[in-house]
Length: 239
Image (cartoon, rainbow, N blue to C red):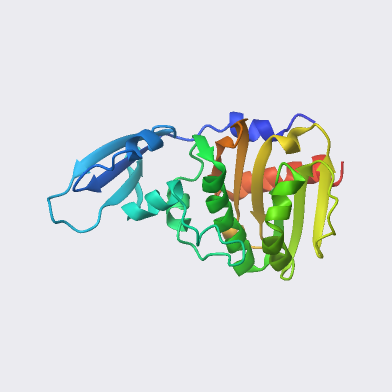
């Protein structure tokens, strides 16, 4: 078997994108944070007194879209509401995630990844059918998200969770656990939604580079999502 979770991150070759920030004053640290992505960052000053800022994303000559500047800030500084395990949220980050899909990031903290992960989980919850595969690295991480996965399992989703280690808590009804010891599951954070409708497919995968610091990407490409789920089935479900 030549496929691996590491290959999904190392082999990504997405075209470089240009992010232009429009604001009356440049955000003090936004350019530094975006510099850790596979993007070019530009700033275009708006006149004083202008409406709230926004960002646009282009790939070559193609305009991909725009989002309010606050959406970018929310990704880097997630609010408590986005991370509320009792209430899956409804798409505050989704437009930004779609504009930056298949774009490599080099340094994300756990809370930022959790905010992006919650968007994928919420999409799966709203759609309600298909397969949801989530890698937690360690059983303690799954325990912290138990209430979310109890709720997801009450839908018609086929929910699979993965981690390196031993699950000593009570099983989560409707959730299938896959474990290993000293393998790739302990090094990668991932979530993949493979629905019955390809247009809803999405996934995130990130490798832990330093403690609680991750590099990776998310994608809305159905073929890429199917490839990830096929690998998980072969390596950790059927293998």
